Amino acid sequence: MRMKALIIVLLAAVVGLLAPATADAATGVTINRITVAPIAAGSKVTVRPALTVRGEVRITKKYVTIWNAAGDKIVSKKKSAKLGTGTYTVKTVVTYKVKKRSGGYYAATTVKRFQTLKIRKAATCGCATAADVSRVAIGDTRAEVAAKLHSPGRLDYADGDHEDWRYTYCGSDVQWVWVTFEDGVAVDTAWIE
Image (tube, rainbow, N blue to C red; front, top):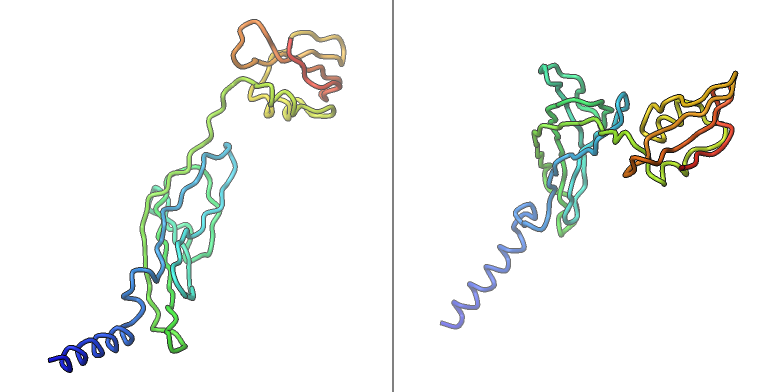
């Protein structure tokens, strides 16, 4: 009876050693959702496969294929792609091999994932914080100051080439951010008053 039990235990151990590593839940590749933070209007973000790799795995291929909202294929089998705001369908494909215990690799395994990817435009708050004010530098153009202060500003005083512009200060109805320009360039750092 003991001999039978010993043979069964040994046989189970041998079968366990010969089982492919791909059956092991601790080895392999998982394709994760691609996430993108909101981006500024007119800019683009790089999209690439997002993976979790477990165990001794060699990635042989990974790419994305992307369709726009109209259903037109805009990217085909690329490692990465630059996309603007919009809604896209992304197919991520990964081919990998798992290392054998005895050396070499098992046959390649391919996993795929489809997802809808929404890239949104970042909201602009329309007012400046103290941190935004500190970023304004002498020599900034009016457009650069408007971008840093999140507001187009309003001309308050002009005398020839000299202009004083005011911008909305976050959290206050009585304080403004002031910037002085000459010939369209900031000649002083911004201040709050």
